[in-house]
Image (cartoon, rainbow, N blue to C red):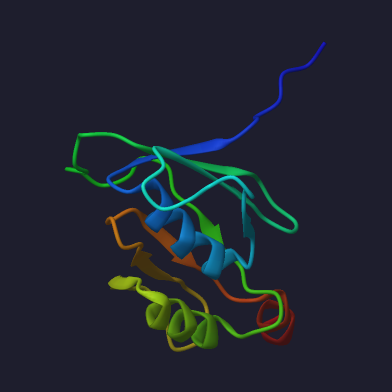
Length: 127
């Protein structure tokens, strides 16, 4: 018998609000029974994991020890960074290098860091 990861869970200040941000980033969906003010919100993504957001009283105080590395499918890395910034992310660090490699570190509205890497097409073009 195997064990599977059922959800990736985020503790946060406002479950519905943060889940709504990630729905837009990942082009996913919120569970039908989730509503503003709920203590939990569940996000399903088309080709990825299910994310569970749980409201807790604690504030985030240090850098994440685990984070997402996002790879855009039908946009360039730079287009994806601009899109996600427009959705409410903030720039944490720009690690792009002149030859096209590297990544951009962003944070969601509650400060959880994540990275945006090059798309598969960009990787293939530089190989």
